[in-house]
Length: 275
Image (tube, rainbow, N blue to C red; front, side, top):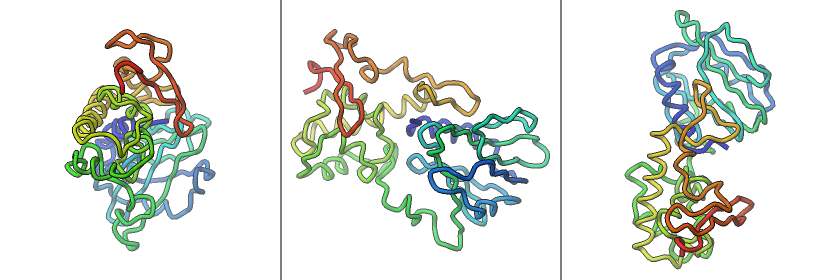
């Protein structure tokens, strides 16, 4: 599943092609996505794009009339390609970019868990949209502080891994990056959030920031279904310490990396380095 670094990599890749250009035509080849794609998205047609932002794992394409909300789901990717590029079976949403570029933005999503939604400006600020208004702070923003994480953990009996993966606490600390940040912080993923010291939570805050920053810089994590906007895989997988390394030696202590399941998600850790 594309996580925050993959989505941010995609946003940065498509932004230069969209901002200050108009969407001349939209094509809906498949409406059966996570939510049915409605004709309201056609409101973007003919409009000039003013910005391309990201909130959590949503890509927000803004214009004067409103905002196109895109989500890559479990297997989706967005790419910019020439209009004469052969369409693939699962290219569901296509936007022609400007009359002079002869380029298209295509949403490819074999499993159809992605989303294509329209938020009209007349309905209020995009921050009040039902999918966005209750999200926690961005992990690389000033709002995600050690104090925020410490306060959110008070009295919580849930595991620390579940806690940091809760989008109401902080967005973007998905399965891969939660595993990696907990390893760097020396925190066992099953520890109760409310029983971890402020010092250790401060370190975890720093490592969530660090691992996501590094992943974005390196283009995201290589997964079977993820490709970046040019169709190439990301490269952060080379740097993973625990995720996907069950049975392999820990890079720090040579103990064997273990795997358990927390909330139906594979969780990788080193029992010696993480307490």
